[in-house]
Image (cartoon, rainbow, N blue to C red; front, side, top):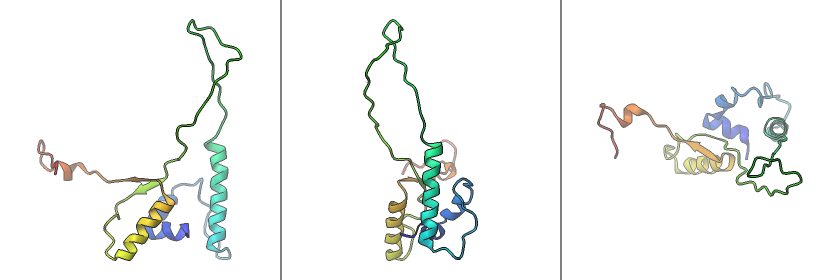
Length: 133
């Protein structure tokens, strides 16, 4: 899948342009889209190492508050996926069924999170009378 094409065709390019740490500048016309994608992903891996990983310290104390030297602990990571997504406003709104299927597939291939718009005036047009249905 060509991530740049997906971003451009789904409106995510404008969002990505506001993330200076991921932007690589103007696209080089001499590089292929695949090479540009690989460069972007390599940069993303560097940034993950720089900003999303690090050391830490765990201090264990007894029930009386005394430090426990040499205690053994076991840590288990509960989840690992960084939520990367965007709004899902186009869902079920693409008129051509084939394009709708393509949109859904590409959204799922690239992203693992979606937000849905909630606008209070549409929910409660008249104060005190929410539109539950």
